[in-house]
Length: 306
Image 1: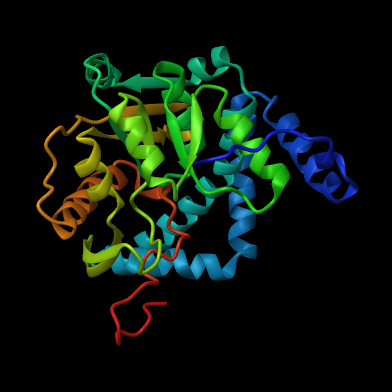
Image 2 (image 1 turned 135 degrees about the vertical axis):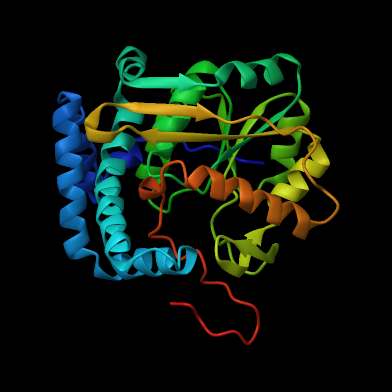
């Protein structure tokens, strides 16, 4: 069972004062007009690219592995745009947590929500497939404004940030579930709830299978999608929160739901899910979290790709 963090006076201890200052600064910055936020976020991202050399190498390597036919100049440009998106991701987290609904609605267009609402009205649980875009926090806030759901998350090691992220995410959603609480997810889905779930990161060798992902033939992929879909009989609905060019706002794109995914084996489901994830990423590739070491887990005896 997941126990959500609550505010306590202990979070005012001096050890957290620096974190509080950072939170206050983020709140202050996202009160600026959006065009100014956009320019500032992209600038922070370009600065981060100069400082986070290891993450730059990881992003470049991931693009090299996934898109081997991509010209090197195009790949370098993609890394630059990706780091601008990293800076904007910080801003968008603050926007998701601190902006009122009215301001969010002004800057976000929602596409395809009627299909998801139809599935929800039928009382069928919805496994909401959220790919790790850098716009993720804002996308989850927007979706919850239309259909409040349940987020799957990893508790933060910093108690203050753990409380804050929970508070921010519950502004438009019902509750949160620890990503290890499989039974809780299944219960929620069987009850007809929406459960947000991200199957696209490398979570290690445990409960993973090796299936293709873009040009990488053996990619460690979680079996969680297979287990959740098989046990809950839910509808799988991918969604893509993407930033429009030149600071013009956002689109939340809801893709068609799948009520009968392939469930014969964990490998079959994982391979199918990776194809869905690929389709989502290609809708805004420069906004995906390429900084993550997606291919760190390798089959036994196979050398590291990094």
